[in-house]
Length: 246
Image 1 (tube, rainbow, N blue to C red):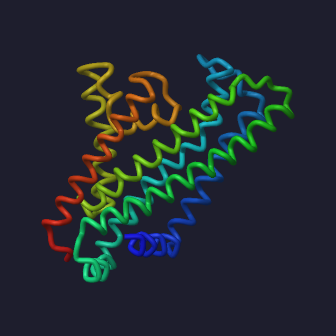
Image 2 (image 1 turned 90 degrees about the vertical axis):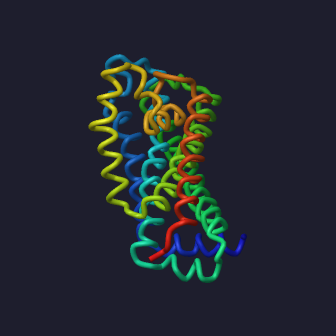
């Protein structure tokens, strides 16, 4: 299994998409952290306290979860599109092992990228707050909670992407489905119940990362998101074992 995971990591490192995702995530997170502080608008956001603003600012690193979802989805579906998954299945006929290896490889990258991005945001954001004479009201346990939540959110969203990629095998189809979920399904759910949309994956992932407060607690949201991840992986594995590669 370790050799299979290493092979998946090598494939990941050899793709330009990975490094594009890494660079984009860090740049966007840094800009989202530095600009509000340097512009002096951090404590002027309507309806937010200084604590909420600073907490959300330091949680910008959790944006890695969204980019890792794209990476996991594109990485898996592109293997089916270009046929590069065929040699893997010939070398390892047990598709369950291949699925587990992909989940471990992409999950590892998600954890490392999210942890690094959050650390960079904190390393830049906190000194900037001090240099601009801004009182720092977030405490170390808040930073730890944001870090753990951000990593967990990114990891689970990545596992969802791997499962969806194996099940659907089309990046466009999944993205269209996500747009339909946001544009059609979410408004319909909100018209029936104000809280129904809070249980969808994106809102749940935001609460796990600590960037949304409305709805279930961070811990319960984590369990819900873990359920989505388990379901996506199970469906992906089931369809992967039953369908032909080509």
